[in-house]
Length: 162
Image 1 (cartoon, rainbow, N blue to C red):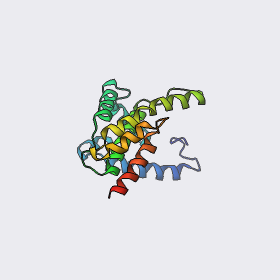
Image 2: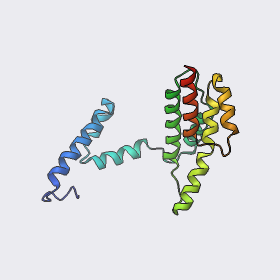
Image 3: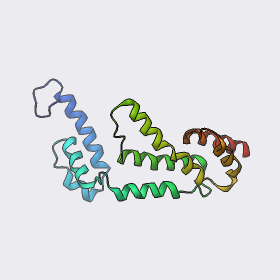
Image 4: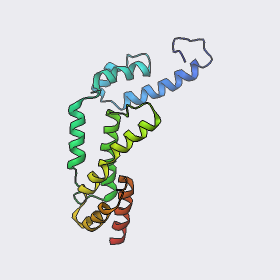
């Protein structure tokens, strides 16, 4: 849809949808900043301006800090579910900043598996001491399960303990 094609059949619907998204963006930005952003003609131009203003791109310091955070995080008596979601958020941010660069499906899978290998270690390292026995049991498994499977085992143990 070309927003400049005012005679297009889809223009009216596009304009309504664009206005909805544009309004949502403006309403979720601090008022002092939003005032200057209302002059953009479309959501796309607004979004592009926000990307230029706030996107760090592939900032190595940001990537480094996220990896440090993933390695240093501790459960600290928070619920297992809350902790898991926090760790998932960190991993997701790392993946968004550094997307899989491979093109071939087989290489993409290999690359994804290599990235996933560290996650069970990070997850288990962060667990509260009360999970030590189950952590050791998981670490004895060959092959080491993915982080999601390790979480499921720890969660089952947590339910049993409660």
